[in-house]
Length: 233
Image (cartoon, rainbow, N blue to C red):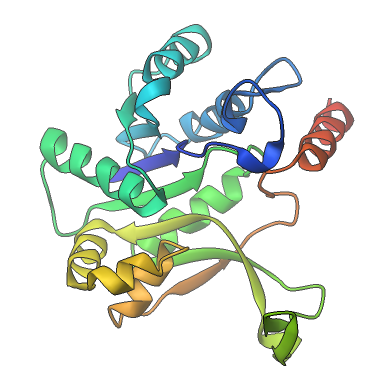
C-alpha cells in the first residue's frame, strides 16, 4: 500500500509574531496546509493521506480539512514533540489501522512546501517502490561552507552538494527497523528523516526537486509565496 504523510507539526518560531503555527497561515485565499493537501489528493495511488499535527491544533486542523477538503482518504493524526517522533507517530497510525506489509511505502512531505508538483510526487512513489529510502534534492547553487564557532572548517566541492527538500519517501518496514536500530545518542542528532536510514547503513536514492518547492519558514518566504501564487493565477 502507498501512503502520504504531511508533517504539520512545526511551531513556526522563525515566522515572527504570528497568532498560529506557520502551516495555518493564509496564502492567497486559504491556509498553507490546505494548498499542500490539495496537491496530494490529486494522486489517486495514495491509499491514505495523513496530516500529522500538534495535539493543541488537532481540532483546528480537522475543522480546516472539513471546510476545504472532501476526500475520505485524509486523516488527522496527533504528532510528537519533534520531527522524527511526529513521523513515527504517523507510521504507528498506519500500522494500527491498515496493518503492516513488507512492500508498504510512505511519502512524507513538509506541510509548508505548498508548491510541490505532481511530477515530484510521482517520482517519489516510483523511486520508493524500487529503493528503501528516497530524498528529493536540488543541486546547490551557492558554494556550501562548513564551519563552527565563526570559522570555516571546510568548503566542499559544489558539484557534489545538494539542497535537501521533501518529499522523503521510504519503505515503511525499512524505516521502522532503521529507527529502532539507532541509539538514543544517534536519535538526538537527527535533523533529517533520511539520516535515519543513512545511520542504519541503508542507501538513500535521490530524485530531482524544483527550486520553487521551497519551505515557507520566514516572513520573506511568505511574501515570495504570495507573489508566486499571484503570478500563477
